[in-house]
Amino acid sequence: MPRWTMAIDLDKCLGCQACTVACRMENNTPIAGPEQAEKGRAILWNEVIPFVEGEYPNVKARYIPRPCMHCDDPLCVKVCPVKATYKNEEGTVLVDYDRCIGCRFCTVGCPYTVRYFNWHEPYFPEALKARLNPDVPIRPKGVVEKCTFCIHRLQRARAKAEAEGRVFQASDYVPACVQTCTGRARYFGDLDDPNSLVSQLLKSPRAFHLLEELGTKPKVFYLREG
Image (cartoon, rainbow, N blue to C red; front, side, top):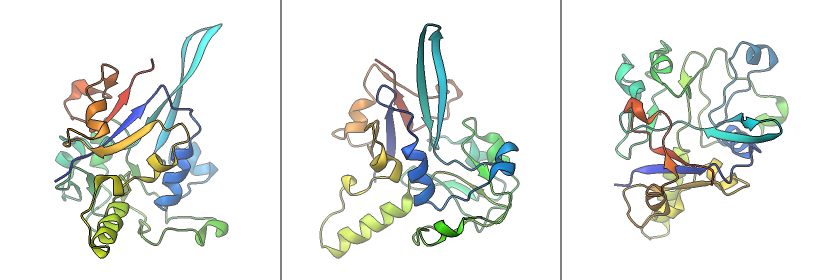
C-alpha cells in the first residue's frame, strides 16, 4: 500500500501561483469575492505565501507553497467529533462532506491553517460553470474543505490501469499542482518506496518539515534554498 507524499523545492519555486490556479480549477474551489476575501474567507487549498528575506539592499523574495500537510498523526482527525475528517489507508487526510457538521474543530486543531469553512453556497462566475470538473463534487455551504492530493485522479488512474489490463504504477497518479508547476518545484510519489524520488529527497540535508516540533508528522516536506 503506497503512502503518498509531496516534496516542494523552495529553490525552484517562482511564486507564480500556477499551482493555486490549477488546484482551484481542478477541484471546483468556490470563489469568495472581494467582500468575503476581506473577511479572511477566501478559499485557497494551495496557497503560496510570500515573504522577504534579508535587509535592503540585499533583499530576496521567497515563497512557501502550503497545501494540506496530510500528516501521519493529524490533529484535525483527533478533534473531529463526528469522524468526518479521517485518514485513509494510504495516509491521505480527507473529509466526508456528508458527515461534516461544520463545527470547525478541525480548523482550530490544524496548526497549518489549511482548512476552509464554506460560509456560503458555492459561487462560480458564469464563464467558469462550463469548466467545472465533473469528477469532483461541489461542496455545500456549512462544511470544511481542503486539499485532497487530487484523490479523484488516483481513482481515475487506477480505473484506467485496470481497463488497460496492466498494473497501476505510482507514476500514473499526479496531483494538478505538481503537473502544473512551472518551475518543476514539486515532486510527488510513494514515500514507502525506497526507489521513489520523493523518498530519496527526504534524505537530503536540505529537507525539512513545517512545525516539525509539534509531532504531527507531516508528509509534505520542503527542500531549503541552496
